[in-house]
Length: 181
Image (cartoon, rainbow, N blue to C red; front, side, top):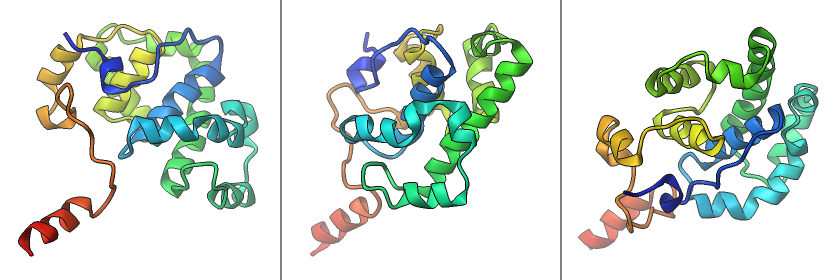
């Protein structure tokens, strides 16, 4: 039975604080539409640029700080993703205050599917796969990968051993043009 690690998901961690949860979630955010390999290569510098994902420090970012980030070649310079990380930091702080701890928030829903749906509503860039990987990484209970995949759209996840496309937008179109010529 394949595991998320076989698809390149980050290794599991035992979160020690909110910054660990935010970092795990932010890695899923940054990975959306990009291979884990690309994200992993940029991660140490990206982590530094995002102040080690300390939510309190990120809350102090203003528009000038965001603009500076978007010119920083160390990070994945996507305004929507950068804004999502900052939004998610703020939301995590709110939810931690409401629930006492972020872990209690995560466990406020007993069922995995309800938790994943809750993450999708409360956080940006937390779709089905992002929620699955995030919960897996922070060692929350998730279904087996096969069970999860049987429930979500089958084409969302690659088959074992199938390399993911590396080219980004337009790659399929460019490949189609080459095959037509």
